[in-house]
Structures are given as C-alpha cells and as structure tokens.
Amino acid sequence: MTASAGLPHPASDDEARQEFAADVRRGLLLRPRQLQARYFYDALGSQLFEAICRLPWYRIPRAERVLLAEHAAAIGVRLPELTTLVELGCGSGAKLALFVERLQRARPLRVRLVDISAAALELSARTLGRFSDVSVVGHRAPFVPGLRAAVARRPVQGSMLVLFLGSNLGNFHPPRAAAFLREVADCLRPGDGFLLGADLVKPEAELLLAYGDPIGVTAAFNKNLLARVNRELGGDFDLGAFDHVPRWNAAAARMESHLVSRTDQIVHVPAADLTVSLCSGESIWTESSYKYEPEGLAAMGADAGLVCRDQWIEPAARFALTLFTR
Ligand SMILES: C[S@@+](CC[C@H](N)C(=O)[O-])C[C@H]1O[C@@H](n2cnc3c(N)ncnc32)[C@H](O)[C@@H]1O
Image (cartoon, rainbow, N blue to C red; front, top):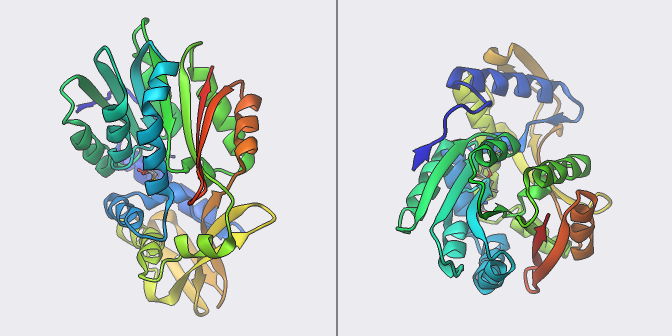
C-alpha cells in the first residue's frame, strides 16, 4: 500500500494524542458523561471489533456480505465507468475485497482506504493485496478529510464509488449524519455512486444480544476505551469498577453503549488535566448505533442531494444496502 501524504488531520502522533486528551476532557465533563466512539479503534480495539464480527449475535457483517456478494455485479452495471473505489472506515477490508472480487470490471481499479486506525489500514491493504489489477492507497484520517484527500487526486476520467459500510452511519446523531451525507455528496461528480450499508430497526431482544453478547467480547471492546485512556493519557480507570451496559432507546431508535460505574469513585487523567468524581450507577455513554427504516435511508440521501437507485434488504438480520448516485 502507498501511504497518503499531506493530510490535514492529525499532523503527528503528538497532535493526535493532544486531540484525544482534549476530547476526553470535554466528554467526561459533559452530563451525561461521554467518550467518542471513534476512539475505540486503537490496535487492540480494531482486533476486538474483528472478534465482534465473528460473534453469532452480531449479524451485521454476515448480512452485509450476503448483499455485497449478490449485488456487486448490478452495482457495476449501474456505474459502467467505475475506476475508483473509496471505502470510509475500511476496518479489515474483507467486505471491500469481496465486493472487488464480485465486481465485473473491464479496467484496473484504484482503491482508496480511509480510516483513523493504522491497524485497520494495514490489515485492509494486506487483504486487498491479492488483486493484481488493483492499486491501493491508504489515508489515515477522519472520514471526510480522508475522502477529500482521495478526491483531490482522482483522475479526470472514470467514475468513483464511495462505500460506507457496517452501519458506520449509525454512530452519528441525526444532524451529524445529515451533514455527513451532504459532505459526501459534495465530493461526488455526476455519475459517481455512494453505497451505504445500514442496520434496520429490529426487535429489542436481538439488539441487546448484538450489543451485549454473552461471551463478553462487546464488553471488552467498550472497556478498552478506558484502557486506552489509561495507556495513552496516564489515566487510572479501574476497569473492574465498570459494567458494560447496552440499552435500546426506542424513542430515538438507537442502541446505546454505556460504561456504568459500580461504585462512587474518583478517576484521574493527567494528560487531560482532569479529575472526575463518578457516583455509583453513573454512566459514561460511549456509543450510539442508530437503526433505520428503509424509506428513511432513501429520504436522508435525497435531503443531501443524492438519488436512491437501488436498495437491497437482507430480511433475516434486517440490514439494508442502498446505492445512491449524484
Ligand atoms: C465499525 S468498524 C467497520 C469496519 C468495516 N467498514 C466493516 O463494515 O466491517 C468502523 C471502522 O471505522 C473506523 N473509524 C471510526 N471512526 C472513524 C472516523 N471518524 N474517521 C475515520 N475512520 C473511523 C474505525 O477505525 C474502524 O476501522
């Protein structure tokens, strides 16, 4: 893989650490206390996420793989000039590799990977290394700056498909999701596509199992965020003093992941210049995963200036893959 240069965010590991410290400080001073989900993905967090994807209760990856395998050829037909794929938040790259394999293509492909996790970029570049006619460039950056960096270097000829899979959109609160879709749409030219994988509303019992598996992998993934604060910012979170608690918020149509303090406790995070007193039962809200209705996804795209061309639904797990064009 070629690494991208000249990215706006963050310029160095030191700046990344300062940004992390500032976000931890801001989030832990809020009520309810919060930590941003994007910080889950250090090297260990990325591995734990891969483990979650293997759990029988977390059905998103398998449902999305089925849809990608079945419909990649149709997507290729919709975008006959396709020469560039950009995946935002590529993770392991396994889904993109499956998509590339099933896509009928007459010419070499340029693949641009955008992820804040160096571990994810390395893994996905290795996964895609098996295609001899695919060139891969990684952009270690947040979604939109990474997309802009990829777009700045695209050739004049050919069209581009941006993939946003794994229901990553669900981590954004609705106003941010709407703004994100507009930012993506602004990066597209007529004839380009946007492929969105998003999880649908389903029975609460299924959601609680998906986000609170009985083996405890999701709990480890959630608690690793506190471990990361300890490792990188010198924090003294006692991981045993928190419970991972998934909650379904029906009014907001979102799953929430919380870390609930088992006791009254004081936590120090020196690099964030922070001391926090937590009461027994108080929660740190670490993630939201919004769930959608199929028509709502099409409408969100339309509000951003995107046209819904196709939508495929995996009925057992209730997951949707929606193809938009500009
Ligand atoms: C839930 S995983 C999904 C991975 C893959 N797309 C899939 O469907 O299996 C989210 C990925 O997005 C990356 N990520 C999370 N927040 C990000 C952000 N704000 N900017 C860029 N990448 C981000 C993480 O590092 C991780 O690799």
